[in-house]
Image 1 (cartoon, rainbow, N blue to C red):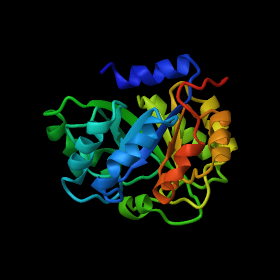
Image 2: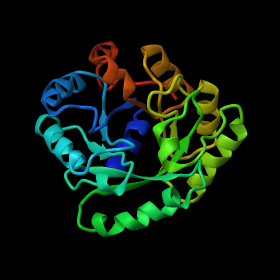
Image 3: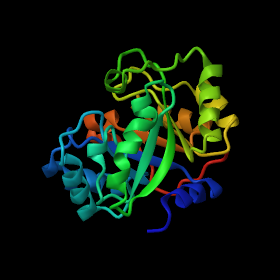
Length: 248
């Protein structure tokens, strides 16, 4: 497979939308994988993310291998812990939780993962991960023991994203968290995007086509859905086919 990151940049150059579905190994039973993947393949989904805050050991390996039986889409790990590093995936978002100040999620977990990553062919993509408050305490907040950035302080969010870029991150990921009560406001997305030269991913709390459109129109290069399809598989049916172009 060609470089995942270069492919992301190519989508942007062509002004094509990118959409990822986030699949949690602890929430998707294996017998449902074939059916879910068939819906994904018929939708606008361009990438499959796999990961969760708390996942049973070996569950990620098992799920990724099953997904690979039915899909040619790139499978990228979205790990909550080093136990979720799977050699069977295509790539890994090397997430640094730059919205928090817990050294474990800024560098320590990354150091612990290196010995395992050396034995894989995973494409590792450094990603600045920014958690934004959404109205409820998320599993990310609980496990990482960090506080999300306040959505009313847009300047701090913008500065944090820019700091991630200046540190050498290749992607910035704005996250409202799994099961968020509301998605990230278009103003936040727009302000962050205007100040970045690297791709912007937005996820959390996106449950409707309208919310997808708002995120794209505000400047998101990739939108991630998760809870929407976990609660209702028919959500895929409202998504248009691949390769729809948009203006930027």
